[in-house]
Image: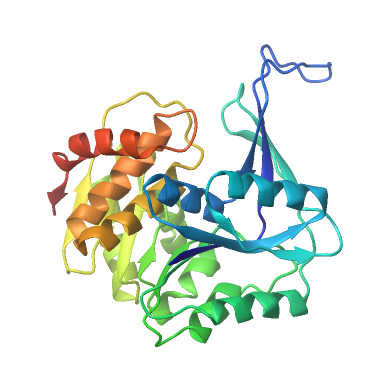
Length: 307
């Protein structure tokens, strides 16, 4: 079974507003509400690819009830822990101005509720996959990911981590199966600016040398780099297509890589699936379907080269 953890899930309220003006009343031209959070996005794409997943995390209030309902409507099993106080956050995504968002805070998570999550994770068995994705609420310890990995160490569980800064670097010693920084996050770790795949390669290798088994670096329109568990380094430019919606593309890449690995246990195939899923979501209004991913896979396969 594949499990994803989203510590601070949301309802994403996605609206285009034509001719948006500050200080005035603006009206939407359409409205869409979707369950949000990196782990939930990974679960959604995995389900689209035919793989069953369970979404874990914390929910609260009427928004939490809706998150659970929306996740289950996607065909993903929801096993969230309910927080009695507060409400799960609502994130406003203003489509008319690219990248403009207003994100909520979410509920406070007590030590008792964190322990309840750890008890759920303690039920994972050898061969299971766990995805830890996104930021953590301010009320949680900064070493939360590391604590989870150490709790599950030595049990044959494949753990993928998609996070930033110390949340990511702190887990390297525990040898996560997959980490997926983007090039900006990778550069931030080492205090450099990384714009090209060639510049990314040595730093991806450094993270693998520090303990990560596979280091997958997403680079939006520049493509991607993989420092792989087979000891090889692969890179590829982005497949050609029209950018429609970049939200969730990185999460889709994680899902695609894991689906590809579970299918063939082959790094090149997993890399190609990651590129295909990430690109297909970027070319789509919503997270990519299997048919969309399969179409892009054919193009991506011809772009990959070993460095």
